[in-house]
Length: 130
Image (cartoon, rainbow, N blue to C red; front, side, top):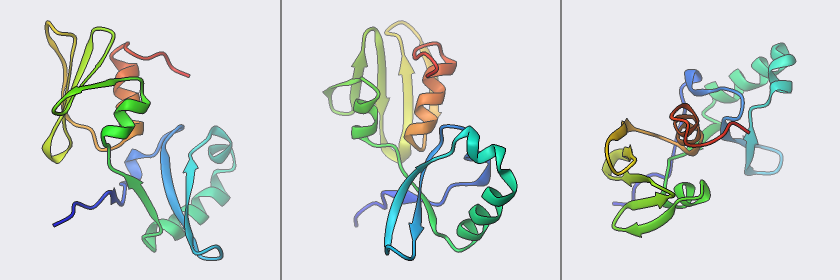
């Protein structure tokens, strides 16, 4: 059985910089979007459109995968181990992720998508906020 690459996010996951896809009925395709500060400034119209799409299941997010980790600058080592400088990411079944510096575990748990991974890397001081 093939694993689903996408899930419907919870509203709590959304923050500035969050990457998601929204289905466009007119073009009959999924469009990549990023939540911006401008979206939040026009919150009324954004929320109306967003909630309508959200309730209709026209919003989805790609689960974290090997490509996402590599896009964050990590190099695949072996199995599901990635390295960048002295930081290692082990990525396994059910999106279970461990981030360590070779001496101690910095994070251990589930990271569902690339936006979440970037947020954790920033919080751990591994990545600079862009």
